[in-house]
Amino acid sequence: MTWQDPDAVARVLAPLGELVALDVLDGGTFASVWEARFASGAEAIVKIAPPDDAPSLLLYEERMLRTEARILRLAEARGWPYPRLLLVDTSRETLPVDMLAMSRVPGERWDLAEPHMTPEANDRAKRELGAILGRVHAEPGEEFGYPSSATLRAATWPDAVSLIVESVLADARRAGVPLPERRIRDEFAAGRALLAEVTQPRLVHGDPWPGNVFVVPETGEVLGMIDVERGFWADPLFDVVAGDAMNVGAPDARLAATDAFSDAELARIRLYRIWFTTLITTEIVPRGFEGDWLVPYRAQLAANLEALLA
Image (cartoon, rainbow, N blue to C red; front, side, top):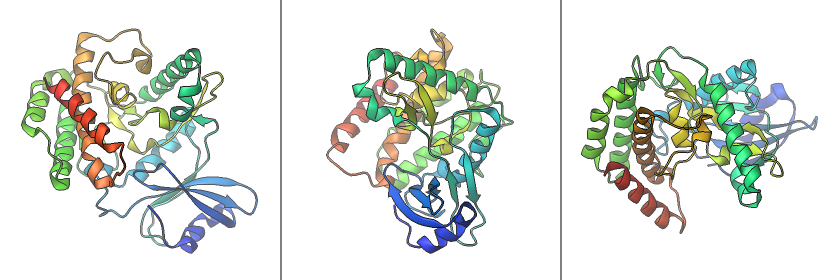
């Protein structure tokens, strides 16, 4: 994803200083991500949202950069190890889209460092991640769902889940992604009573996979987390699934800072796995993912969804 008007970007960033370099970074799947350098020597990470009607967007991603700005402000007040928000522009006066700038998180990406870390360091990273998520999950909300969405919010968790899952299925139909829609709907209809046990909206990160976690590889200390734009008000167990997306076996209790899950929690985790597997299967087409890795990835997702629906 590229942006064609660096002068406009520089004007938005002017409160941070004179822009001398703006280099695109790899990894952004929603917004384009850039490294900005200023004449003062300061640096910032810049995110530029896609247009509201971009074909790459899924329905739940409506104005999601505004969610990131809101959560980064909250994180600074609560002391969570998220980036510090430096600037946000949602006026769409200089750029026709939303943009924000934030501080860089120190450390190395855990997904890149993990193969070279000791088992003890990786265990520490997992446990510290669970503890950080636990602090985030302590934040209560007033309603369930995506805060920047006009439609994907509800007073109850079962109603919010129904709206969100239906939006993913609609995205799949639009993208021509074949899914067993009836079987998926049946699972969530049968699980409404289980979902109704969740009565207090809690903030979740929404995408705490190792690529969004920065660590000290030698020790496993977690220094921070990024990409909080997918945060929403939900059941904290959603992060257990989103942080270990390809796992259909025993869920990792370390991600919930607990020793074990109850039967009801395991049942909800299974529903969230169906939801998340449906989501990451769907996003392949609108995102335009390419490469030889897609063949085994799609096959694994299909096998995982079948196992979860069995």
